Length: 165
Image (cartoon, rainbow, N blue to C red; front, side, top):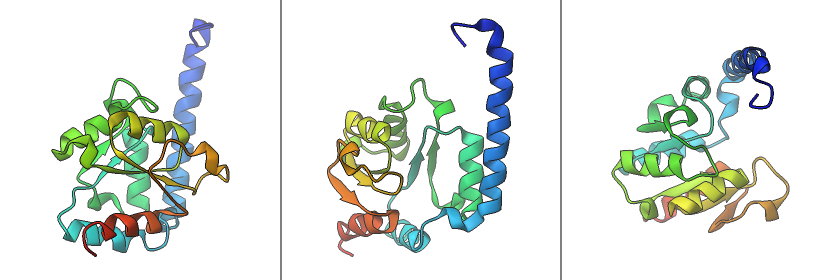
């Protein structure tokens, strides 16, 4: 839209229409959005006193809709979304803000990510980077990373193992 300012109103309308469809799909899919076993592992982390945050390049309204539909909204202490920071991923802003809101240094944070931009953002923030293969078959694209897991449940098992069970 920078090249064609006259298209801006049309672009904004299309973006909003896409967001409405996204939220409708999230509501329709419900708990199927959460991977099997994720909720029970999140509960174990919460019970262990671990602060949980979501850091996403999505906007708040979509993030809340997705987490609500998946039945996970109440488990997270912090939601840091694209509309709350100056720069989205691959910049580290989202993860730096989440760490700060949790009262942690970034190197104390474990970030589960499935996108190359998110992995770069987590690394730039100074967090431990746990890559998930849930959105790509190109494992080599999932860099930089400290660990690699096939799904969220397996990655959360790794995080839980660091707590002594």
